Image (cartoon, rainbow, N blue to C red; front, side):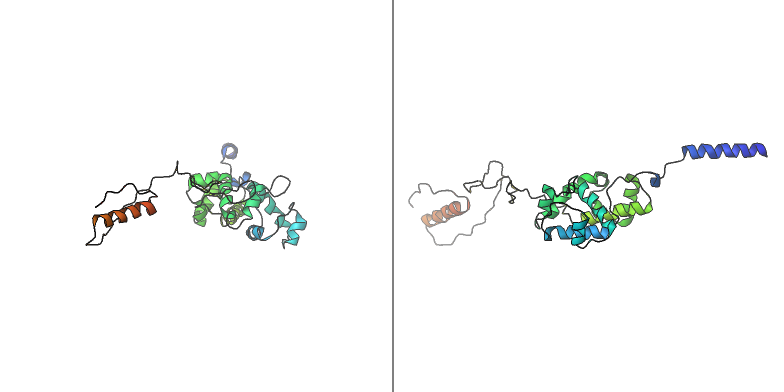
Length: 237
């Protein structure tokens, strides 16, 4: 019997040495706040509030975020490049303030931070809670509560991003720049050198009892107004 106890103890020691490392024993891989609801609220506030010189607890309290844990929101904003290391708003923050462009400029940052999620799913932001739980279990670490906070942080960010639209580019003055390759320049004319070819099929119903000259006038009007062609020398009927 004593010999069996020694063998069992040896097996237990070997198992403990080689047992799989639990996710709770590892560090979280993704940014998270302990107050996801506050993050949702703050992202909605940013376009409505003046751009502050810096984010700190005084500013958060003035915006209605009085809980000490609300400060954990700032590490998330830094992770997606809305704040710099000094908690100062970045150029991306300024773009996010623009209601028509904000959701677009945030999407690429979320794709960057959560790259493993977008490699595992085309649209991880629309996956079920069960699927997200599985993805974060695979790609991140931390205990059950920390994993849930990472998931809720991810959801809060995605709710304020537009993934199906290209980001609007801004020029150096902050004005919205055109996205198309045929954008108008200073003269207002479009650059069609790289524009895609467009094929137009016209079905024309010509009136009866008209002369050849009348038909030519109709065709020339179509060419001039639709294709921008000038009329050539016409033959008399």
